[in-house]
Length: 337
Length: 223
Image (cartoon, rainbow over all chains, first blue to last red; front, side, top):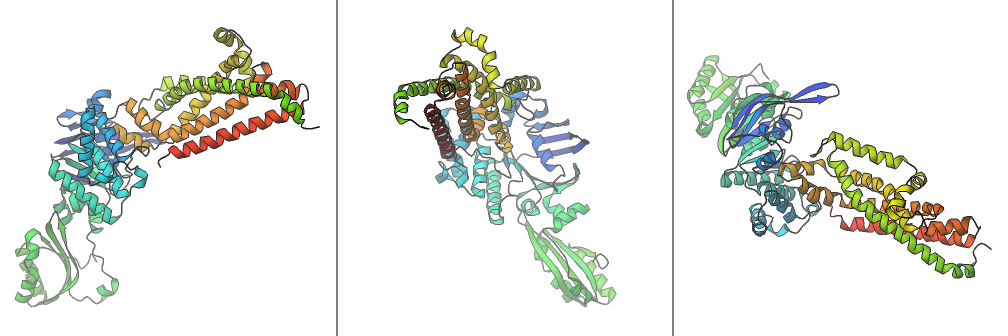
């Protein structure tokens, strides 16, 4: 378990002080994949860098494996860092060392006996699928391959936590997916807690269990990823969600709409139950799909549809109640659009 | 006559001797400036602001001394260091004696070049090494030195070329070497042949050093 308690990071600049992280407290469970989302400048990167004390917090504590890192210095802090892996947006491999030597470097930091180093490097490269690249220099690798080396280096000393600083932001979508799969695999097989920061909701949707949204150094929303996607409360959260689940309707379509526009949201198993077709059969309403999607978050479906319901107002009202009775969340949004 | 070939041939033993002295001066002072300047440059870098061995006092004092030595014109340093040279070498004339002031001039010069090449190393790579739990010594040996290697080689090249130029100046006070020959014959005796020959030799030396320095620096870079 990892605990962040009342963490504040204040930066001194020429123009005065800037609060990067403002009194953030989080508890992250062992084996969890935890996402921190926010725009640049929201403080997510500072927060992440405070966790392994790359930046020293102004106040608050970071408790990893029962140890308050903020009380550690020098050699003790260095030893604690061996158990906290980190990967970066720009990989940061030693360019003058081969892939194998880059991983060796991490193992040497933990004073691994020389006899074990070779076998461990091989093992790590197998895990990230780069065995044949052991003697290659980073310049000859693609972005995705570099990140795999970064992951192997981060995992070298069997850390309990892996920090990911925008780890997929410099990669193309296809490579991003493969890196996320690798992270998920590592999380499952090694039970490593993963904390990742990103501005891409797709990343969160793909692998995170829980998430927080940050704005101006503060956590403004926190919850299970599924719940946050289904029910974003804060405007900023809604904005982020809309990057994945967007319901922009063209004005020409809206002009032709005569009935009520409703947003229907199905969570989990309800999404597959055919609630809408039942509703249309049972009530004298015409349903017109304007927009819709079923997102799978952690393999759990989340269906969101925009519909136009035409018919007698009473019938429309009853149809809505019917859907709600079947577990859907319905919202009339005529005015909102 | 601008260039008297026979005179040149007759002077060959002297030129050869002077060339050897120049090599000796540069060899001694380069070795000393590498041995002292490299660690000094590393210390200047790792104790600077935002680095992992930040030490304001240490960095300030070293920086001041380095700047101080570098601001003294070499010809003045050469004379000012006569007493020290006398203690260390027992003599103030000859290539070995000249090596003392050459080293003192080259150490801070090379140290700053080392520091500058380390500044070119991606801060992120240093940070990633800290995050991985590396010791300061590991970061210096396995990150800073390899990553800055190419730049350091170029720094060595520049140091050697500066030493070639300085060693020619050391000739004025009897330091020996090519510069000494150029001044004694070429300048004082209006011996154009020797003047041309020595200048050509210096040009060739500098070109060879620069070209091989560039080639080595490029060959070892894995980027």
